[in-house]
Amino acid sequence: MADTAHAKTAAHVHHPDGHDHGTYRSYVIGFILSVVLTAIPFGLVMAGGLESRLLTAGIVIGAAAIQILVHMVYFLHMNGRSDEGWTMMALIFTVVVVVIILAGSLWVMHNMNANMMPQMNHDGMPQLSGFGT
Image (cartoon, rainbow, N blue to C red; front, side, top):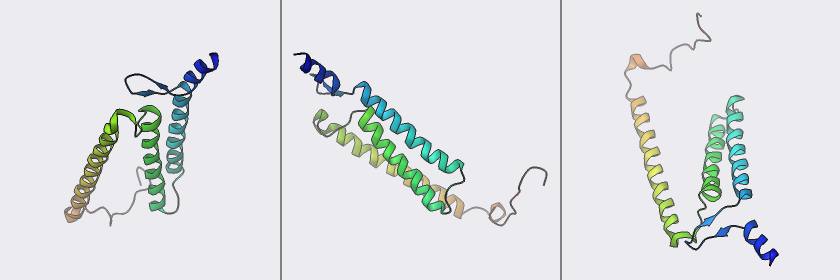
């Protein structure tokens, strides 16, 4: 009988309302993964990045995508079973909205950069190394 009670506390506790609630261990794992997935891109960027800016950006974006998944699994307890698939529908809707917002923002910023007035073009200006130079 004691083994059964211990097994219920060690694993995810399934409540009658159909929601799985995490354990202390799962929250700690999620927290550690989140810290690592934040520290890696931060350290990479603060160290000056890699020789390829595209590779640096890819690593940062990849870590961000993995961190989204970590948060959904360890903190929001999203899986395919809960709420009869409504969480998956909410996830798909969220992904669609985020893609629309990101694509629209990048499109607007690109068009603003392409249509800048010639005197505002900063590409031909010399780079200043510090104040007073």
